[in-house]
Amino acid sequence: MEAARPPSRAEKFVVVGGGIAGVTCAEQLAIQFPSEDILLITAAPVIKAVTNFKQVSKVLEKFDVEEQPSTMLENRFPNIKVIESGVKQLKSEEHCILTEDGSQHVYKKLCLCAGAKPKLICKGNPYVLGIRDTDSAQEFQKQLTKAKRIMIIGNGGIALELVYEIEGCEVIWAIKDKAIGNTFFDAGAAEFLTSKLIAEKPEAEIAQKRTRYTTEGKKKEAGTKANADNIGSALGPDWHEGLNLKGTKEFSHKIHIETMCEVKKIYLQKEFRISKKKSLTFPRDHHNQSVTADTEIWPVYVELTNEKIYGCDFIVSATGVTPNIEPFLCGNNFDLGEDGGLKVDDHMHTSLPDIYAAGDICTASWQPSPVWQQMRLWTQARQMGWYAAKCMAAASLGDSIDMDFSFELFAHVTKFFNYKVVLLGKYNAQSLGSDHELMLRCTKGQEYVKVVMQNGRMMGAVLIGETDLEETFENLILNQMNLSSYGEDLLDPNIDIEDYFD
Image 1 (tube, rainbow, N blue to C red):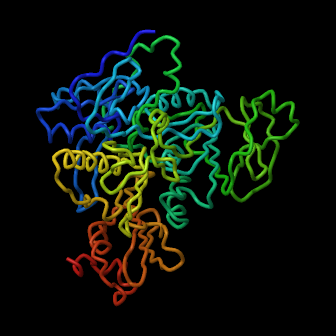
Image 2 (image 1 turned 90 degrees about the horizontal axis):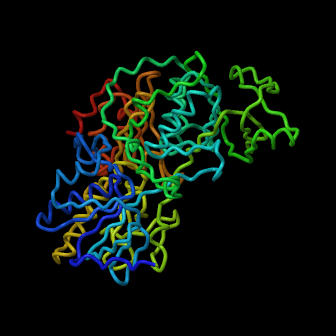
Image 3 (image 1 turned 135 degrees about the vertical axis):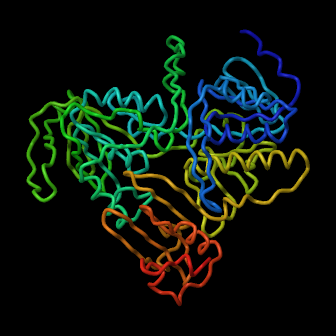
């Protein structure tokens, strides 16, 4: 057995993970310490970079996510050295990290940003696809060109976008909640968006914002197990643009939603034949619930907990992610959060000395602001990566540092079904109990505004469409002004609320 190479001499800042959190952290460290080498260890040949960053308001930010070859990062920051290798082991007591390529790297401060991996409803089944990174999205596109019917399991952002983008293929969408998009919306917002699902889709006129560098050009090393399990970083917010998501059939939209259910069992064709069970045809319309048995033979069948069985060409598992902590656990006693992430304090520091974490891999374990919550989203990965670098820098220089302002208020802007969607604060009344009230304003097909109030103060909001209310509402949530005297006028479209509160 060959001896491991001797560790590289000087202790360095080391960052693990080539996603948004890791790259942002490495860039920030490179700016703060221009004469020191910053190591970025990543298993994938492409990294994710933030481009076109725009601060929309105090806490709302917009940016694109671009896949780039790691050489582009090294060109921008000559003191960043990218090591393209997976992590084999972390020896926290020796301040040393071993990579799959046989090297050892001694760190003075380490930031773990290895992201999360998709929870697959069923491992090792060839008909179950998880969509998490560019490679899996392209594999999905390839499968879809031959498909007549697919099943989507899950109710998060990826499921929402998929359902809207897929054409020419029957889609059966199984969700465990009463309404779609449960992580982002309540039933009212879901209803507002569902009407758009059933309508015909306009041709998207938006030019695709990011260049894609795929990993195709890289020779896949023959037969290594690593390829199947190597996780690329998460997809960007407009990941499906430039992918042609068309099935075999000639219609645009055919979607049937099964609510309040989960997957009970998955049968391959032969197992299903032996089981003697009956599967259902695609429901023709919402009102006519007459159910007929399906005569078509499918490669895979899904039995749901509501007793219904549907056959399909393949299943998309979009049921969320779990923090990717495995590579770092052996021999290290990290405190873990309930969601399986590495617990971090208000300086992004884990429970082990000189080790920080940021992005999807970590669990925020400080006492949060009453209007902030952690969600595994792009924006938070960027903010955490940036702030972790600041904290690492401060600690190594012996400075103190205040909590970053972005953790004062939860704020996220995205697009669903071609609508602009802004989420602020406790937008779904998270953890407020029954002690809150909602105010709504909705113009069908145009906008949906929901405000969450508690004791006369605004605690959160959902804005769908071009409402132009985000800055005003952001301020009202941040300054916790008592709004009782305004009552319903707060959402009256004829009153220019911005004039009140400027």
